[in-house]
Amino acid sequence: MAIGAREFIDKLLVEKYAEEKVDNHDEKALVSKVNADDMMYAMNASSETYRTMLALNNRLTGVCYGIVSKSAKYNQYAACH
Image (cartoon, rainbow, N blue to C red; front, side, top):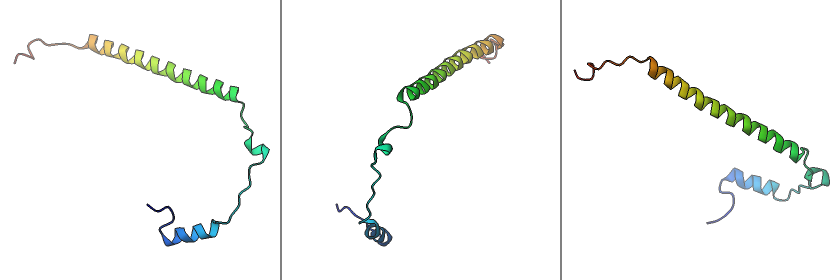
């Protein structure tokens, strides 16, 4: 299995950019712009909010099922005929 461009346009692009040099490894590029503690706090707050929403959704679903089942009128003769 060969590695490389197969299409004509890809070969031309490879030839064009084969000798390009990229030098963006200065010290400023390697330093994070976001504080890690702030990011972890935001992620934790978001996940706690989502977990709370899921728990409330599950509880509301159970309550709705209970209301529907209590308000349902069952006819014992409908199943026999």
